[in-house]
Image 1: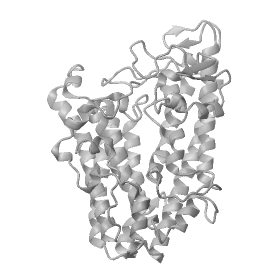
Image 2: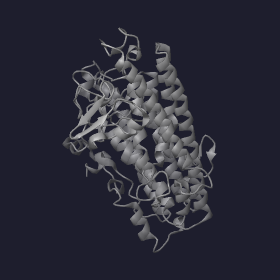
Image 3: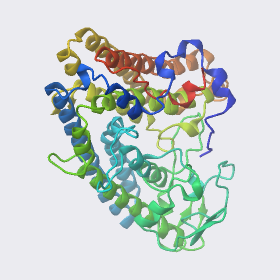
Image 4: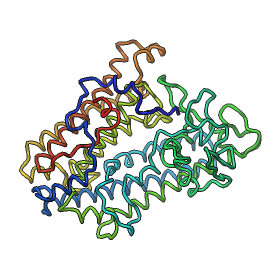
Length: 471
C-alpha cells in the first residue's frame, strides 16, 4: 500500500467552497480544558442530573454491547482462521473471508467511542488509558504491507526492504532491529509502529484482512485482492508466495502462524475492552465516565459523535481518498469492503444519538435533548442523521447490487476513463461519495448546534486534516 502523506498540497486546493465548515473547521485545542473553564458557571446539561446519568448509563451499556459483539465476532473469526490454517482449502479461505466481513460490522460501530483523549481522568490502576490509545492495535491503517509479506514489484511505500516478518527471522528499520524468529501475539504487538512509523501496522483487523485477501493490485478498476490459497500450503513444492513457488515451506508455515497470532491478539485486546464497560466496575473507563457526570461527560459523548462524523469518517477516510483518487487510502483496501465500514461507522454514531444498539441502551442524545427542552434541535439532528443513513445506503447498494466498490467510486474521471468508464458515469459514482461527505458535515454542524443549545459551548468537533487544511 502506498502511504499518502495527508499534508499534500493537493488537499488544500481541492477542498471546494461547498465543503467549507463553520465551527467544525477548528479542532479543539483541548476539550477537557474547555470543559474545566465552563465549570465556573455550570450549564444545565453538565449538572449531575437524572437525564445526564441516564445518558451516560445508556451510552455505557451500548459500548458494552457493541464491544461484546465485536469480541464474539473475533472469537468466531479465530475459529475460522484456525480451521483454514489447519486445512488450507478454497472453501475454508472463502469461509474465513465471509466471517471477517460479518464480524467487522460491530467493531466498525464501536468507533464512536474513540476520541476520548483529553477527557478521561488519569488513573494508573485502570488497565486501558483511553479508547483512543487502545484502538490503534486493532484498527490502525493504512498499513505498509511490505513489512508483513510479499508485495508486487511496482509497490511503493515507506518500507521497501525485500525482507519482511514472514520471510525473515530479523527485521531492521533504521537503527532498530527485532528478532522475528517466533511469531507470537506479543511480537506483533511489539512490532506495531516499529521504527516510529505509523504505517508499520502489524496487528489488528487490517493485518488479518491483508493476510486473507492479499494486495489489491487493480487500482481503481474492478476486483479485490486475490491471494492464492496455496500461500498457506505446507507441502514442499506446493507452497507459494503469490505467483512464485517457494523454495521450501517456511514462508507458508509462518504465514499461517502470523494469521493465527493476529487473531489471538484481536481476541485478547477485545476482552480487555469489554472488561472496561462492565456495570458497577472500579478503575475502568465506564467508572471514570460515570464519575464525570457533572463535569465533561456529556461534552465527551457529543464531541465523540462529531469527531467520528467529521474528522475521521468524512475527512481522513473519505475526503482524502476522494480528492486524490487514492485507493491506498481506502479503509478496507484489500477486501473492497469499505462500503460496509463507512456505513457502520455512521450507524455507530446514530446508535448513541438514538440510544439503541440491538435493543441495548434505551436513552440517547435525542431523548436527552428533548428532556432538556430542546425538541427542535433533536428533530433537526434526527433529520441530519436520516440523510446520512440514506447516503450510505446508496453507497452500499451501488457496491452490492451493481458491483461498483468504493475504490471505483473515488476514482477521478481520468482514472475511470482508463477502465472505459464515461465521464458522465464516473461523476454519478463520485457524487455518491460527495453526498455522504456533505451530509456528514451537516450532521456535525447539527451536533455542535445541539450541544450549544444545552449549554456546551465550543464543542469544536475534530475537523480532520483534509478539512482543516482547506481553510
